[in-house]
Every structure is written in structure tokens, then in C-alpha cells.
Amino acid sequence: MQPSDLDNRVATLKDRYRHHSATAVLEHALHDPDAGKLALVSSFGAESVVLLHMVSVARRDTPVIFIDTQMLFAETLVYQQELAERLDLRDLRIIRASDTALQRQDPDGTLHKSAPDACCALRKTEPLQRALDGFGGWITGRKRFQGSTRSTLEFFEAEEGTGRIKVNPLAHWAPEDLRTYMEENRLPRHPLVARGYPSIGCAPCTTRVNNGEDPRSGR
Image (cartoon, rainbow, N blue to C red; front, side, top):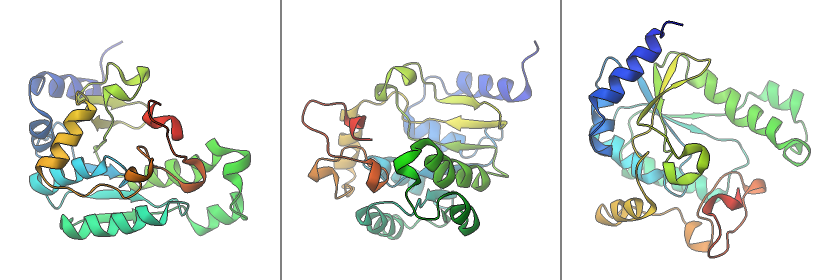
């Protein structure tokens, strides 16, 4: 089977930026025609401020997509507003599931209890796919240390079924790299981190994590 144009572009980008730093990968990708038009998808969660700050430095008008599932912690919504203002994000796009879809599939807001995967599809996956229409790729905050399925994560990868590129600038970073970056740039932490939430999603599906446990075990 012949490699597709998408595969060729991903291979080119991998080779071109193989030895670059996270900040350099992000900055170059935002201006490289092979990457296409990019958006940053951000949850405004525990570690999100790192990429949001990098984008604000590299290209402040980069579209930033924030998925409001309408089940987020109040602290996340306040944090999102504060960061958007502090970093002067010029193209913040807040997206939600349509009222029609919510009324049809989750009229009483309890779908997360009986079918959490269906709830995620309704409130996160489907709105995100619509929001990414017209983009050649998107920037994620995924990292190798987050689990065995991500242990070989590269800076660039092809997203199956969409024809888009995923850009993972922080793929090789360790937790201490994130902490150092936040401290050096005096970036505010999500308020729930100090209360035992190292990974933050929707309120009904996020719990505190005890010392020594996997940070994502509360999701």
C-alpha cells in the first residue's frame, strides 16, 4: 500500500523537527505548511496552562478550542476565563453539544451514570469533531509518561479517519519539566490541583487522588 499524502506529511514533519525542543516544535508547526492550519484543543485542566502559555508566546491568534461539557467544575470555568484574559488569547472558541442533541440523548443529565462513554461522545467527541472541521490538525497536551498506550508517542502523528495531523509538543516531557516551566513563567495552577485533583475532567467523573496513586486514576 502506498503511503498517503497525510502519512508523507507526518513523516516529513517528524524528520524535520526530530531533534527540536517542545517550544520549537510548537512554534515551527504553527507556521509550517506541511502541518496545515492548526488549533489548540485545551481542557484548561491541571497542566493545560503550559501549552496555552507557549501558544500565547508563539502565535497568540492561534484558535483555542475549549469544550464545555456543561458538567465541568465551577473552578475550571473560572480558571478558563482568568487564563484567557491573562494570556490574551485572541481566538478562544467555547464549544458545547447542541441543545437538540442533549435533549434527545440526555434530557435529564444522567447519561454519565448509565453510559459514560456515550456521555463523552455526546458532550466531548462529537462537538470537538465539528469544531475541528476546516483544520489540518490540532495541538494536544498528550505525553509519553501518561500511560503505556502513549509510551512511544511522537511529536507528530496521523489521526485515523479524519485526515488531520495531531501535534504533541510535550510528548517527551516528564512531570518535573511541567512543574519547572510553570514555576519559571510564574503561571497560575488550576485551583483544584492543591486539593488533590492532579487530573481534572467533568465533575461527576473526577475524584481526588491519594499520594502515590496514578495521577489519572481519578478520571
